Length: 234
Image (tube, rainbow, N blue to C red):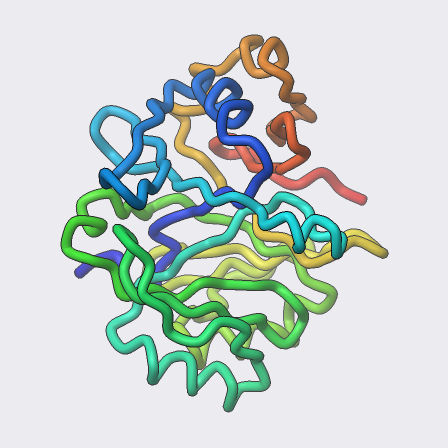
């Protein structure tokens, strides 16, 4: 399975599904729901998956949690990978849990505070997984964090440029580690294919989003990157 140990799915953890549908429709994404009783909202484009959506729990909002993107990485052995994360000074914040339509998943927080979901997908979910985009993870010390992801998922540092680390798996780029802004939390930013972001043009702002160069900010404040976009310098 070519998507193993790569970010192959995103989940938008937000407050309002209807608002998210409007703004991401400008990328050409089609909203749909899997299942009949326990429904799972997601987006597709031209028959391919893009991302899912989950409600940010009310208690989490009251505790100060904000909408965010959660990257999901399919792995061959969930229990073993979670145990390895703990050995590498990560923290398991969600033990293996069966989630309808998605599969079995667990969530880890890396040594510098960024969360990542590890997933054993259902057969039905595998058809929606996709990879090839290169997301960005901002960190306080990218170089110090890199060994965690190398030992956990096999992501090796292949290039260092302007403080940014390009991580590869099997010779293909899988992620970029970048310096986070002073005082900002660690942050995962998806990077969408050109076909998605070129379609948006001015309609993104019309539906409540903002554009800062190649950075797209949606109506709830979540940031993502257009194809080829780079994070602006501090």
